[in-house]
Image 1 (cartoon, rainbow, N blue to C red):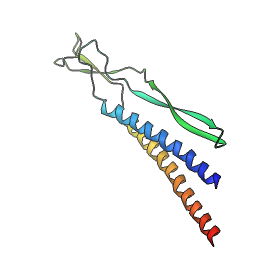
Image 2: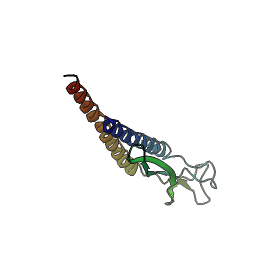
Image 3: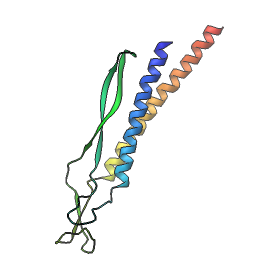
Image 4: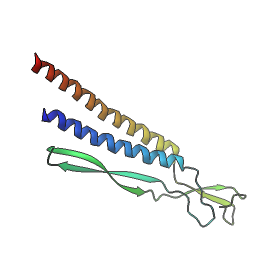
Length: 137
């Protein structure tokens, strides 16, 4: 019985970590056009979630948890928009270093990983129900 509960708890940590990852990706996408208000102000900088493997002695297994958020130090995008309040002397505005295609692919991967953990929960519940049926019979 404890093996069933352990697998549920391990899968739950995966669900939590992927949920946090999807929130960071959504934040990146929401801010993909957030330029600064002045030429000197930096625009939004893409955030990258990190994960940590943590050994849980009570479970006797490794779980995953969200780590700190890292900043993507790649260059900002520049667009020629001379009328924009954040345009520099040359008329260029710096925009976030967020690539919506990369974020979409990261989101798809996070969703698939979330679904895989959800399947572990579902199968474990089915196995637990089957075991209880056998014990009753």
